[in-house]
Each structure stands twice: as structure tokens, then as C-alpha cells.
Image (cartoon, rainbow, N blue to C red; front, side, top):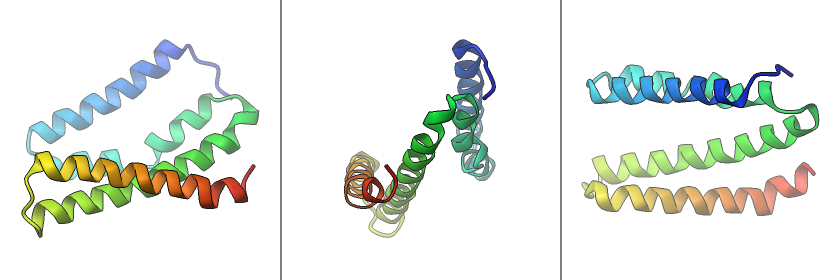
Amino acid sequence: MVNLNPIIVGLIGGILITVILYLSNKKETAIAAIISTVPLLELFPILFTKEHSTVRLSRDTVVTSISTISALLFTYIALSLWKMKAYVAVPLGFIIWFVIALCLYNFFISKIVK
């Protein structure tokens, strides 16, 4: 475990999010998408957790990653193929994210890893 001040960890994460948002707003969406999907962003917190928490954090990261990908896929399909408005597609994507995360955690993951 690397022992860093939580303020430093927050600054590193904030800088990464800021770079992704900046690139997205500058029409460099491909680069922003690549940076945001680098596994480092999901694995980064594991470096800073206590040893006994890493398995739980890894499990929860898997759940949120699967549900996030599902929600993004739905949002993309809703916006591009179904021509939904963003103010409808994004909340629906959020609902799908929540339902999938809840189902994965309650029905599958909690029974496999305790």
C-alpha cells in the first residue's frame, strides 16, 4: 500500500477527470474516451487502500464497470439509433446503470466473493 495524503489522491483523480472533460469539450472525444477507459483510472484506488479492503474494492469495481458499460451502451443506442433526446436518454442510462449494478451485486457477486 502506498501511503499518500488523501488530498494528493483527490488532486490526482481531479486532474484526470479535468483532462477528460477538457478534451471532450474541445471535440477530442476519441482521445477523451480512450483516457477515460484506461484501466488505471479504475485500478488506481486499489494502490491506496488498506490490504484487507483490496478484494472488496476490486469486486465493487468490477460491478460498477459492467454496469457503467451497459449504461453507456444503452445511452449510445438511445441517442444514435432511437434518436432520443439527451435529457431522456441520460436519465434512462442512469437508471439502467443502477438496476444492473444492484442486480449484479445482490444476485451474483455477493454470493461468489464474501
